[in-house]
Amino acid sequence: MESRGCALELLGVLVYVAGWLCALATALLPQWLTMSTALMPAESYGLGLWETCVVQDLGVMECRSYDGLLGLPGYLKLARVLMCAALAVGALGAAVAAPGLQLVSGGGSGVKSRLRAAGGSLGVVSGVLCLVPVSHTAHLAVAHFFDDTVPDMVPRWEFGEALFCGWAGGFLLVAAGLLLVSSCWRSRAEPRAEPQRRYRVMSADAASSRKRSEYV
Image (cartoon, rainbow, N blue to C red; front, side, top):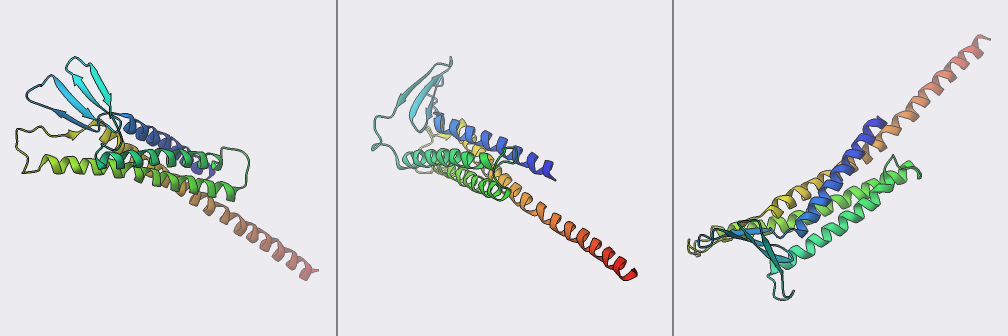
């Protein structure tokens, strides 16, 4: 049972790290939304949280940072805040859960289980914070793409690689948090069987000693 608990913890940690790295890549990638026009098929445009890029057919990419924060659209401001919060909460959750692992020496089992539960809960919160801006941006892109008031000849933004990476990172963080919390529940349930076993052994010894005393 202990080996299963350790394996569950290690799986949770690995998924946690993979999800946090995907969230970090999502925040840094400039391809949240992509657009290509029929007038210039050799070029495509990418829209990110921090900069916009032009990718040529030969693989050359030129990026330019945004001039200021106040001129940005509302969804970009929201996405920046939530992605930074997701990364900060995810890093805090990893720092809290690391001392609670069974492979780390020191500390009681109760303290370790609480640390793992807290770290797993922060991982779930981090995953939700990552999924919200990604899903909101995707919703805006879909609504604009199927807007009947926009002429068909006007180019439209489509999903970029960062959105798929963000969905993967958010779901991985949520899954990792649930794994850590479930490993905490498993470790709490396992020690309950030992006192019952000891009680049965002690009751059996007491009964045998009582029979011996009656026989004498």
